[in-house]
Length: 116
Image (cartoon, rainbow, N blue to C red; front, side):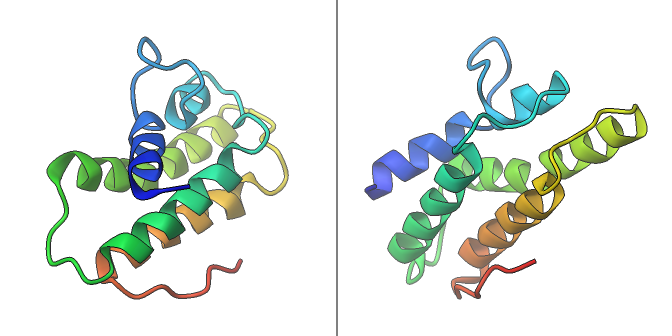
């Protein structure tokens, strides 16, 4: 995966249901888990972005906003869904924390091993 593909993938995960029904946030808004391989692809894209941006002093606004949304929105949707009785996959909470950590690593410029 190259930088541009990784960037597009991450941004596409934060768009509305009308724009991409399989976006992570759109699926979770509907009470659906990620499609198989989606979290792995997101984590890979985060690593690729980090490698390409680790020496950069700035991030473009669209990417920064998507990283923020990937950090906050899925965890809020998970909690709300859990309270509403949605039976999320067993490791989804940990996967969402990994995504949040990967986004944090991009902002910090230092890749720390993601484990939960």
